[in-house]
Length: 616
Image (cartoon, rainbow, N blue to C red; front, side, top):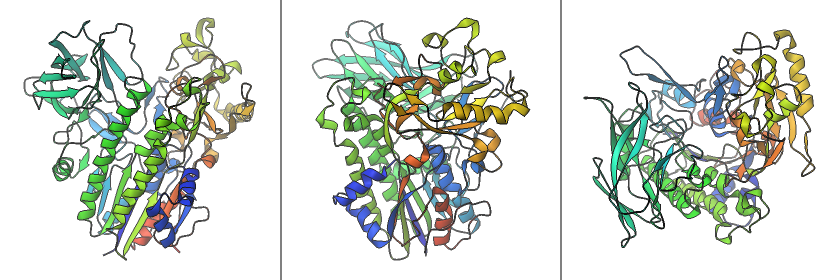
């Protein structure tokens, strides 16, 4: 029986991999290189996880599968929306239906047609899961119970704490004399508006350095020790007499004194009763929990990066949670390897990407995120440890590979520093292409979500991580750009932004700006941003501009702990590719992976696939 094992190690940077290979620190990847080969692999434009893995799965460029970013905009309202999936109403008395916005025909669909099975564990843009011959556990795209990528709750007695990225704040009474009656914030109530709540009672135990949480959940009593993560607790939010929504949540007790601070993870779908399907067959998510001996994270972005980025807990707590993510995913992979006998087995390990986002600052003492302080040497080796851990996973997988097994290990893109944010909307404003209402100036007052933009005088705006849209008449809700003027406006914007120099560093921040038709082809090109901005190393669109903000100045230091990134010119951040068979490594691209997998399993490539098999 022919078998193909694909292990995704999200975000591995070729420069780090090559140095560690040379130093003998990645023995299992070195063995793959010896047996077959190693190369860099061209990523997608933009170099984003959902975009890149969608191209891996379908063998087509983003214009052929329709995923261009995490964020898209509603052209009628200009408001940002989630780009990976949506929910469609099916009638007044029926629940909404989840729809995957990744189009194109994935490799497992072609294998199903050929009578071969696939097991797909946590591939991005597989929510909701699609029918296939085999099993699928959805990956990036699965929301939390509130519908976000990961909405946490922070409990504090301080009245000065403001909500950060993707979080809610729940106020606790001053002091820690228990019991403390509070609640967990659940999904929005579709019937009466507002948020559903789940009541909990906190019993602080100073002597034991812990909090006991009591609730109607399972277990009814949960111990949360100071500085540690709790076990999972199952919770239920009541919608009505006979309706409820169930979820899974963990807690981290940040501190007991001088005031109680408690962090609740995003509420994950319950593996047994998910709000929407997260696996195929539908019971696979639950049986997998039984097989690996416990509950696991189901959200599309497992690692609680916002908790660290918002400084709700420290590096050790984040790494502890990442360790849990590694263990969960490894257990899933080993379970599937134990019963794998034919077809394709794919498993993605996301954690290297998340750790590099948050810990890149430890590689650069002068990174703005260090705010002038010398970074702790305790975390200097954290990123390389992620690579070693990935290598160890590969070693375990190789033990299951016989002479007929094709093994592929790859990353979807590389990585680099994120030192300076680029306020694209402010640049467009200062070039007379974006106007704010009532004489307002760029800055905090302008707010997010383009809410202060005067559309009657605006020709272009930025939203998302790498795109600029034109305010086109007949397409946008208040469009003013005549269709006949689109081409010349694109050229003008590209010329005005390309080569933009950051006066604070004397470095070129924007390498190029390209019209979408020169980058993409296929049936969904019209859904892409009109222009793609390719940043230089060290630069990325600013936090504010990505959500439609118009910040003060053209550039700003990135002082967030999220200090590494890969949303730059894709030529600067290729991924890595290892195979246990010789392959044509020149100009290898993610477009080639689906045809290569099909070739290894004796199945012709799909008619729409743009790449070619890399096997010699």
